[in-house]
Image (cartoon, rainbow, N blue to C red; front, top):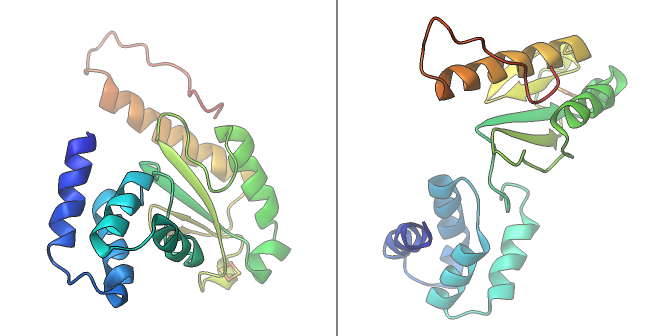
Length: 176
Ligand code: FES
């Protein structure tokens, strides 16, 4: 796994001059490839650019676009812009946190779900809004949170369990 990561980053590094101005596009390309910026990748980039690792960490942590932890297979982005905040966005976020057992910015240990808070996504009339894997869900209630988690948990069960007529299924590990 570590070798694959190293090879993937090396392939991206070969596409760029190692001028400081290219640090940002390299980080973007690595994140697009890996889904996030692992510490090993940032150290490899620092070494290629001939800069201290702290310089790369500084850029990665300065820009909100960069993710330092692996994303979940399904990513929930809870909007806490003004309209969504007024319409109960915090309740929705709390609900996700309790159901998933993680805080915003974290991913479940099985890497199935990731949770983030975001600013206005431009659909205020639908507040409170959650962006689920890039799709906007409007007027989200705690019941809707349960429904979303249940549908994804069922999908996961189907993925992991060979289809047999005797499969009794099972409850969601996320309490939905
Ligand atoms: S404040 Fe949430 S979509 Fe605008």
